[in-house]
Length: 623
Image (tube, rainbow, N blue to C red; front, side, top):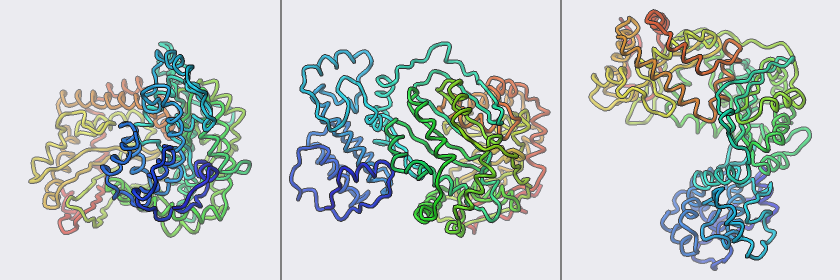
């Protein structure tokens, strides 16, 4: 069995290119019993890497139990070992080894390991008294048992670690991560929310460079900062297809002033992680860290956004990763349907391009292409800095002094022209998936957006938590009445800067597809013609507002919603209370206008499944 030195572990945890190859590990029973838990953790992970998901949980649990591992530790170890991608084994191994070193050191302090059961604030003094009677800890990992955490231990307590390619490693995939978050909140961060800071008001500042700075500080112990640009795939010309996908994969690599090893290790040391995401309109860079460390971490965001070094050799190394991302993304039928729907609705505009890079473009990207795209689109007057759990003055100071974004003329996206049509694709599954869509309103018409949300709630749209806010939605009842087998139906909305999409999603058996789709279109037209009563409208308004309020409670609400409003909409951020008032003011005439809008143009149909049972669009949508 190949062994790994401490330096190799260190390099792997920092996001260094993996050069250590795991070879076939001998059976566990042939190895001598080792007393040090970090070594046994290493041995078990090597064993799982070799055998993969075929390793029986009961066998591993028995081995861990015989070695004295507590039940919570066994459960967390198995979840982490069997859930993470194989490419992340080296980093996972490093984190688990370090966590079990800490467990070995602190196991004598209390009967319950503090890694999985972090002490509450009211028990800190008792733990400190007990620890004073113990021998001094070894210097394997900095820190002590009184709850004082060093910067290096924040690697564990940050719950996740930055890594090249913006992929995240979550310690324990649940048990360890959640407990570490509680420990980090009660020990490391001294800030506490107050009644004055619990308001949801937005503070907005526009700098002379054109950069918008928006914050919503509710006193959270975790700070979330997002730097968002209006530079999504809509800005990719035919010769630049997939460049945004390439930029997203390059974040966390070498910059002009710091290596990828040092960059990722510094972020991990500070208990922070940075990830990059993109959509058809936006390109964003998200930072999550402990509130007390936000001023130390923000300069690294500037370094990654403005000074990333794009090299040919790095592109060659990440080509395979981009192809794997394409394959994984299209394993989800719903995600595949959304891509097909946009391609059908906007076949002759960039809005219809796929989110991920085409296969034929992956090997054609060059550093010159990426740098030119960055120079044209990553500019200050087409960007916004959004933060939650951070003081507004801190963000303004950072944006003014440490964020060197170039200024320039803001590029305008190529207009999206809705066309409509149909697209079918074979998919080997017992069910068939279909979406029907039509053009809706854009982000610039906020009042019409509110009316469209109420319109979709009348039919029945799925809320942020995955369930219908109405017990049995109207759309669901209509399609289920004409189906012989179980059917799932829901509505959805997409809002962009100059266009929008209203759609209906169904999943059913191939035998029921024709009748279900006809029932869906018929019910849509009935609602569009005004066959709704006041009670339905009131319930739909309440459902739409309830969904917004639930989303506001999510940690990423501010960073997701505000950039869309400012960059794609009217140019200013709207409080959720104001938007709820717009929903209350939606009238039946407004709903009638929405109905005319979503039924006026040619429908778009995308179907994934058995093509023998798929109806023709001309027969499906005839009046």
